[in-house]
Image (cartoon, rainbow, N blue to C red):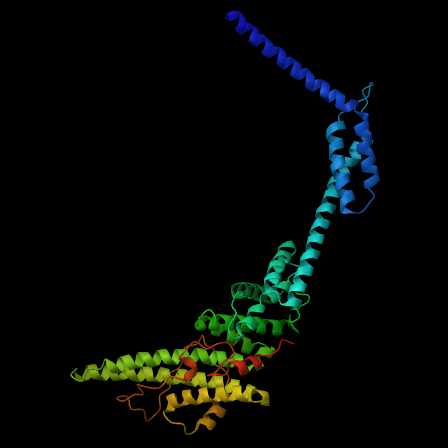
Amino acid sequence: MKTIFRYSVLSAVFAIFLTAGGISAFAQDACADTATRDALEKTIRENSTIKTQEARKKTIDAGKEFIEKYSSCKDEAGNPISADLVEWLKAKIPVYEKIYRNEEIRLKAVAFEKQFFDGINTKNWNQVYASGKELLAIDPDKYRPAEIVLGSIGLDETAKSPRVNTWNDDTLKYAKMAIADLEAGKKFEPLGFKPFAYNNKEDALGWLNYTIGYILSFDKNDKKQGVGYLYKATQIKSTTNNIAEVYRSIGSFYIDEMNKRIEEMQALVKAQDPAAPDDVKAAKVAEIKAKQGVVNGTAERAINAFAHAIAIASKDPKNAAYTKALTDTAKEIYNIRFGKPDGFDTFLATSGAKDLANPASAVEPVLDADANAETPASTPAKPAASTSSPKPGTAAKASTDGAKSKGTRQ
């Protein structure tokens, strides 16, 4: 039994020596394999001057194999074999690899560019977003104009009836990105691509703010945040400061705010206790009166916004239905504010001559000199346009005509 064990160990040791010897023999054989060496050298010399991806790949692969197999080979006199070629390959392969990688990126970009513009032409927005994102990942500086396109698509889609909001999250993301880059002075050449192209930086900023404000207001149901962007769209030297729908959208925010204050005021009126002490009654009346002032101030801001919208829309006879819808809503707000229709035209004209207030500023309470604090306007009717979430391009029932007044980018 012991003899067998010792024999097994000796066999294993012998096998190890054989394997080591095999490795040494293999290394020697690789250097002696002149046929493979010549074939690799031929491949390198034939392809190294050809400027195609296929030829570059062959040069790189053959060069790496040549270095691996033959860089340490020597002749019988101990001199390195193909030393000049090995040195040349060590210097050139990194260059070829860089050229190869850059060309791969370029070809990839060319393919995505085609997909991007084909998608725009066919209104395949999924394709536009997929390829646009790839282009921005490849070279964010070169393809920065794609930010504007990706940040614009959602506005037109949201304005459709029924509303399409498939791309709104991406639209918001890229619109904000484009605004940040524009304001930082980064280079955009050009400012988007038709139909999402703009004449100048201010025009692009106006439309991008309009887009964000519109989507936030009418798709994300966040008018409080959206109105800030809409207001910016009216303050920039852009075509957006002459689009009725921008002002109508701001007015919609104030209608909602007015209705909230009305509900709060109605709750205060309802909570009055006839049996309460006089000082408590007086405090409650003062609170109601203050709330009435806020309602009035908010209503006047709403009328101000609608007055601007009406003035713009009425310039084009094609917007007659839209203008009427805007005017009807403004009249309802006026009736809530003053409790009567008299004097509407004069008040509208006066209000339209005033600049918009910044929605971020607090509403200044407005109280009429003859206001009776004990009997406030506690049960006003809400304007029709505010009883449900207004759809893009609408004022009261004017969705079709509202879309016509949305404006054009160029």
